[in-house]
Length: 215
Picture 1 (cartoon, rainbow, N blue to C red):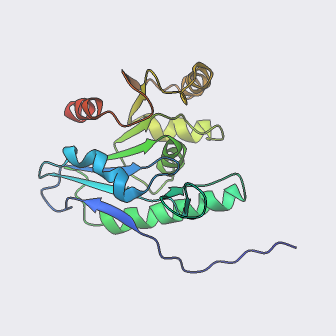
Picture 2 (tube, helix red, strand yellow):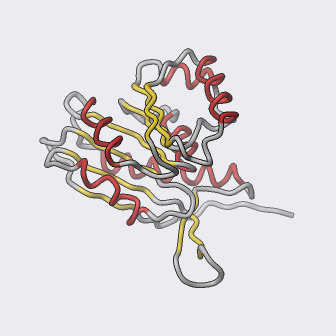
């Protein structure tokens, strides 16, 4: 018979830049399947120009990408005991947010939540948490999770900027998935900005800088 328990858990995250009275933008960036925060955050260093801070959480489950040694990656969840995984990473992300944002002046700081690939489902579930305050949700190379509460999403996101980004050669962003996402967005009465760049399943630097210049 299966049992569950609660216990204290230590986890890491990466940060580039500082949060102080001069901070203009805070970006929380959530990686995709098989990535690590220490490398993923490097893709966003160009955003930091003295008044920006980048925070990159990391999936709580790490594994060898090939066999039993070598490169390591992380994942936010799998299908096994998925609801527990979701609750665990939400608690982890909430703890990071509480620690880093407790002294932020919300009147002068813009908060961006970005999820890449598998991280899009993670960042969406996190964004819909009632205690998370932000200005801009970005879904890059991924789509809304199929189990999102459409009414909660409508109420939380109606006053936020929503941006969708993907490469025109991204094999994971199929027409079927895009159509399913459009149906969900229509049901929530949301009209996101859309950026499509020439390329595959990656963070395109030119597109990232273009988006940041518009905010």
